[in-house]
Length: 201
Image 1 (cartoon, one colour):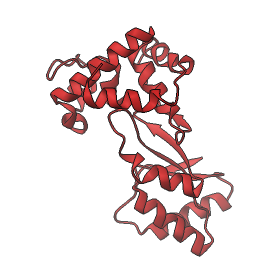
Image 2 (tube, rainbow, N blue to C red; image 1 turned 180 degrees about the vertical axis):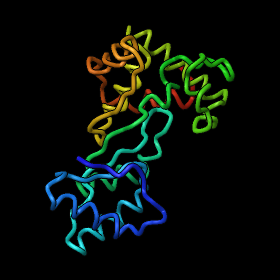
Image 3 (cartoon, helix red, strand yellow; image 1 turned 90 degrees about the horizontal axis):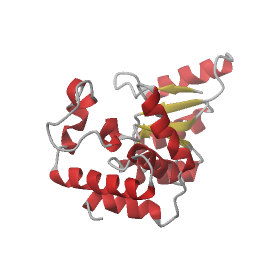
């Protein structure tokens, strides 16, 4: 599987798809996909591939978490309709769903909010911190790690085939590994999403 990291605005999509088709025909890769791509661009890419008889994108890799559900609006329906797989990256929203951020400005040294905070500044809101506290209480009531519950939620979505994690140490790895043992009901998915959105518990 070979994925483009993001669309290149200076390169025509047709040229990118032709290059990927060439790589597949040379036997260097078997399947191609895309990351950080919009639903409209995926739809256009699939149309171009079909029209020109090129290998098409069979997999998407976009951000998806309890704090970023934007792909539910257009990408998930498109992937379902076209039979395209989906991997969630950043299922912990850059560490926001691990429980390490309790209030604005109180960020652990070495965390993303001290190293590269720009993509997450929009989360510095009271309602988000209330939602995180509610999710933490839910995780404690279940006897699981908050990060494991957040990843289990992402994996429970019927359109998600896999999730990418990025632990920095063994403790973080084992914490999120617990997500594979958490069983969620169909009712748990929307309930946990609402919990994070409203902060109610």
